[in-house]
Amino acid sequence: MTDFPVRRMRRLRATATLRRMLAEVSLTSDHLIAPLFVREGQGVRQEIASMPGQYQLSVDTALETAARWAGKGIRAVLLFGIPEAKDEIGSEAWNDQAAVQRLCRRIKQDHPELLVITDVCLCEYTSHGHCGTLCERADGQTDVDNDLTLASLAKTAVSHARAGADIVAPSSMMDGQVAAIRKALDAAGLTGTAILSYAVKFASALYGPFRDAAESAPQFGDRRTYQMDYRSPRQAPLEAATDAAEGADLLMVKPAAAYLDVIADVRRRFDLPLAAYHVSGEYSMIKAAAANGWLDERGAAIEITTALRRAGADLVITYFAEQLADWLREG
Ligand code: PBG
Ligand code: ZN
Image 1 (tube, rainbow, N blue to C red):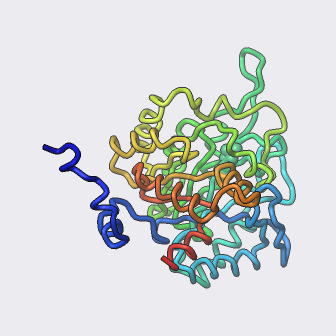
Image 2: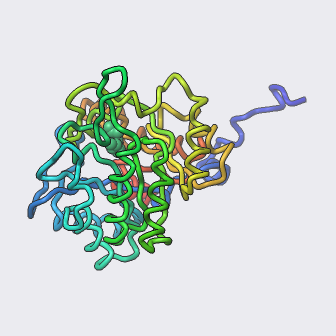
């Protein structure tokens, strides 16, 4: 009964109106979070070579950029800071006068409606480029000390929240980071600051361009003792469950497009809002192919970011945010 020639799937694809009415997922500027790199200085607008169209900005130019994005309907920015000076423990991360904190205050003054999310990690701030304080393990290997790092992350989150960040987003993959940050925020009276946990974050070659952008490449080794192994997806619900239990308000899966199975699994199992981070390498691959004339940039970017929504992401963090806002408005 349902087989050809009675069943013809093409009937419902025949017109743009039908296709539009039957679309099961949507992507609008309401779903987008735009990453932004801020450093010290004035009038800085330094394009990132491996991420065409993305810039390192100073507080003044970042504020202009955020205002332009808000004018295009983007609701949220995700701030990353690049310090002038780095040290062993990354202490510039919790300096209340650092670029991220100053930019938070300026955005909340001038554009209070724009949601400010801050990345809470130490790799941009440590001289060795790892996401926390180093230690020597019993087996002689150098590694990141989990519990020492928690104290630094907590101080950083409190500094960001005091500067007006609406949401803090810990990305270091230290065990217990959400609990440590929630406890410190609450102790500081910042009970209203939400936590977006990078709960399910894999060690990935796709972060390569970001490490140029944020000047945060590890000076030795890699991040595989703290970020997840992409061959072990059953750890994803465990990571998400611990962060949810520790008080995460929103969860994240990262990277995104190569991890649609993981996004769909976390979506099915958890009711917390879910973000997917379409990371730097995923952005740069499309940019490079488009620059060569090998694919249509607009079509590819919309298709892949919409696929993140289809997999179950509520929010999409993407370097395409401004372009998507333009394209989606044009319809
Ligand atoms: C910091 C951090 C990274 C990214 C977001 N936060 C880099 C890393 O873990 O090495 C990657 C984002 C991207 O590639 O776009 N821990
Ligand atoms: Zn880090």
